[in-house]
Image 1 (spheres, rainbow, N blue to C red):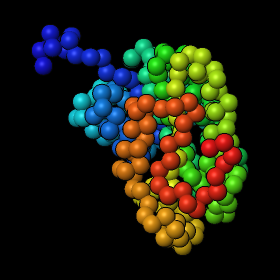
Image 2: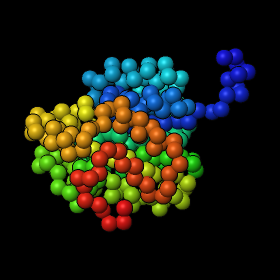
Image 3: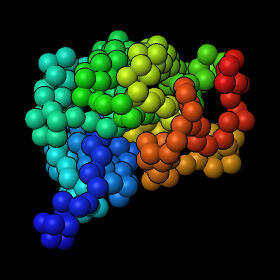
Length: 259
């Protein structure tokens, strides 16, 4: 491509995906690059810097600009540093994918799931909004087990995380009117248990029958690549207000009033 061609090329959109050094976040980053996005790769643990750099390289190979920023989303100063880097490099954002979550890590504090899955999600969104123009979008990634926790019990090993993620979803939804005033769209992507994720692996160790039980009830479970494709689609396809994109079987989950 010549310099003249580059000047005529449509501008690429700018995305930030939390927790994107591996797994669903990393696959989503590459898929978005193929759809015309530049992508900021976020990771928490310094031990994951190599994986983050590998994701950056994959995004670049798919046609997008990319850089990685280490930031602990539960730390306010770290979050501020993340968005300073975004503003300095790109000046703004067109898409925020709230993918990072957790709470089942060994040795985590008792309130860690709530701090990460609720408080940190709100903090990240509030920090991102000043960098987002009208027409931008926020995608929050959750699970059926969390989304439906008020109507459908989940496995005991996952319940604290499920409740914390539902609390996070509720807190984010409370911000929708303010987002709409600024022309920022909001969509939730909810999936069943996903084959190959860290959460599924941990749950299977704690309860060896859990994954098989869900697979049998659902008929099949989506894998990481398939779920990432759904997130990428939710980032670009037209959405109605307050939309939830459900991925996978819903027959085991009691409906929520109003949905």
